[in-house]
Image (tube, rainbow, N blue to C red; front, side, top):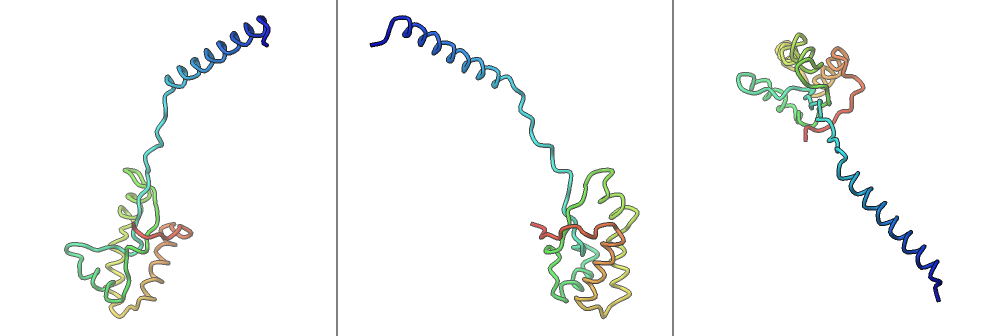
Length: 134
């Protein structure tokens, strides 16, 4: 048998708990949830894909059994990024590759990978994790 005072105290406690839960739920519904920042990086092919007028260079790479989509690094991307300023901007990554291929028509797959390593050193990409494009 429950004493009246105990029953009354239990009811008050239950009421307070219900009020607390309702208050917390109301606060939670007012919280602004922040979405994660958009990814400001992009995958960069270590050995260029070469499209359009540069297709002969793609054929050169493919003829040596290299699948360029298997060799990418993640770099900062955007208007003032390392990718646009130093790799494709003043660095002329693709042009350096074309010049190297023109100067080394007998290059093997090993030679191409060694050139890729030298360019990664030159452009500050050494130590970057090499990942497939997708």
